[in-house]
Amino acid sequence: EVQLVESGGVVVQPGGSLRLSCAVSGFTSYNYNMHWVRQHPGKGLEWVSLIAWGSSTYTYYADSVKGRFTISRDNSENSLYLQMNSLTTEDTGFYYCARVIRPYASSSDGSFDYWGPGNLVTVSS
Amino acid sequence: QSVLTQPPSMSAAPGQKVTISCSGSNSNIGKNYISWFQQLPGTAPKLLIYDNDKRPSGIPDRFSGSKSGTSATLGITGLQTGDEADYYCGTWDSSLNAGVFGGGTKLTVL
Image 1: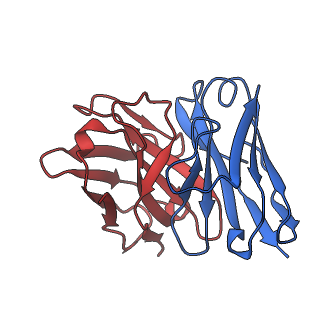
Image 2: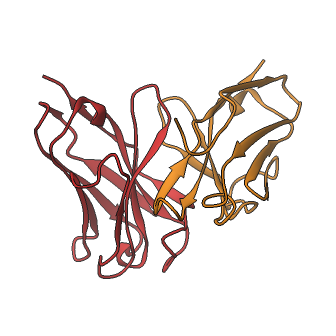
């Protein structure tokens, strides 16, 4: 059974750092594009970042997080990470990791078929 | 301001049909496949439609998708009270090199 579970969300002060993790099971994440999507409380979905399948050479970021967030994966651990630095109150929200529906997909594939339950990050003083 | 434009809210009676629109541009919907997601309160989004018009296994054929040019549509027939949710369209923007979503449509089944 495919499962994704996020962890690491806490309350952090503005300017602080945080690393989110996404533990995956039921499939080999090495073969899949993996994404982070966030949702500010009561608001819509916002795409955050993509790491392409394979050796993690290709990564993409939303302009709102570029230069502050870093996506990575540990294929031996079958895990996905999001290192978040220089956090602001605008980064508060639920963070979801998500998988695309097919292996070896192109970067433009936005068919997220499995999502984690979400993890709340709160940036507040 | 979302890159993709959806109506903020729609409503219809049980048993009726509703169509939710999603408008974009040549660099996103015009160039890439569109997906549709359903989000029930307090839960993660769920994939309803991918590759413009395909349904994942387990999604009933009451849900359908289509795309024409830079716009896409999600159709839901035989509305049920359980269909009350937020619906999002999403795709890739080849100019931004980023994923993009619509602002979401809150569907009320009266």
